[in-house]
Image (cartoon, rainbow, N blue to C red):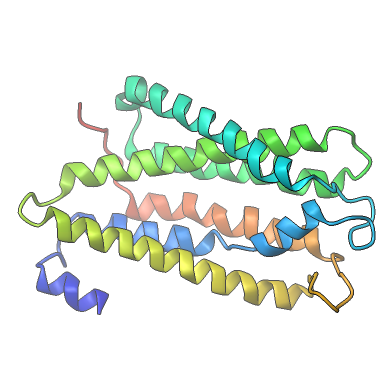
Amino acid sequence: MCISVVFALGLDRSPLIPVTVYWLISEAIAVSVNSVVDYYFLANDDCVLNGPAFSYSFYITAPALFGMAVALLVSSIYSKIGYSYTVRATAQLGVLLRIVGAVVGEIGPAIYINSDNRKIMFLIGVGGFGSAGAMLITLALTTHTAQILDRGKATAQFAILVSCANLGTSAAKVLGQTLIELFGVHARQGVACNFEYYVPMLALTRVVLPFGGIVLAYFLVPNIYKLK
């Protein structure tokens, strides 16, 4: 259906198509394994021995508030100096920051189990680097998209872009659940917890696969500057 709409609107040769494809794929390879990640950070020692055991209020509220402040700061800085960097470079930097955020905020606390700084690592990684990266990707792609939309079909074109991004997000959830099963990581009610391959799973889903977004940007995201 998406393909037929693209041709019906005459977008098959539009410069919007590569960016749309990039957004779809980059969202899909940002595999979602949040269900087990959430449990890992919140579970007590009965399930995750020497785990972070964060309180629910801290786990939900702290990175969200810090992330909002970081995103606002990044947005303000980008509005001032974003013209000096290409759309591709900005998107790639965003992906890299998200990877760094996952390494610091999610993989780090799972490796350094005896560290007293796991809350700080989580806050800086997820709320700091992760939020900054996500904001940069959004700013780069949306501002570029706004510049190349056909003014007569802008609403329909942007709807297609958002739909493809949502499709990628849905695919990420399905792929994430599949990988959770393949790695044997689980924390379901009535079943013994198993986080033996939790770190390797995170390395694949938070580092290796998302790194593909940096490579794909060379082929699908234009190396042009944002217009003033």
